[in-house]
Length: 291
Image 1: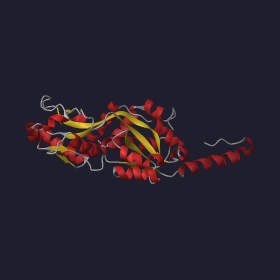
Image 2 (image 1 turned 180 degrees about the vertical axis):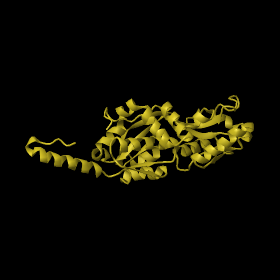
Image 3 (image 1 turned 135 degrees about the vertical axis):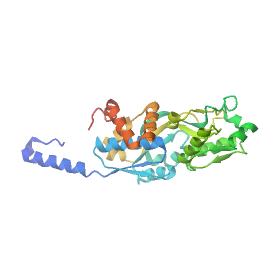
Image 4 (image 1 turned 30 degrees about the horizontal axis):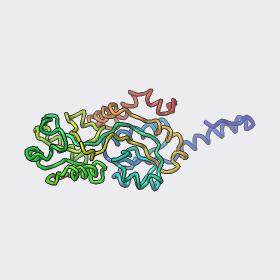
């Protein structure tokens, strides 16, 4: 509510109050870009709900692939995205736009990329990516590494891992997150061996018994942080939203639990339950004010 000057009188104060309400209603929608990965979907929809319900901004969600997301934010077509995996996974994408965007904060630390196998695969058979070169292992894996979409940073790094470990006889199966998960679900039901590209946080670790295998050459990178990047001047034009995003941070364990719940119900229900179950955290994100 606007603070009125005493010289304006009561009538002027009423006019100013009405004008403040009108301005609040006239806020342009906040455009949030996101890619169809489960962690990105949850944090994006959680942020959108808080921005709309607590800060009073309309929100437009724009789903697309990772390269157009970076381009869209850098050009100002999108206000922000919440899935910049750095310093390595999205290094190429970020390098092209870093001077045209603003980093608002880190949503979560300790994110990880790697290759996984089901826990029923003995560790003395597969403990490391190096072990995939064993003939008997290659036969059981059918010479395949189950992958995700072609534009993903994990796909780029996995292609490098295939070269680094000289896995020339393997095919990195380019698919999608959904396609990869369908394949591993089918394999687990039959207790078949597989190796798949994966990342944490992800709900699959709540549903399936999986383990990462070692990457001694470091081809798939180390621990990552996932940042919010926004178009230039977004923080100046939308200081309340930018301040909220700078404070929004989720523990990975909480995020994985919420993502698993989203798979069992829906992302919308999981978001509602997270907000209801974490009032102090939401209040802290909002700077102590629930809006």
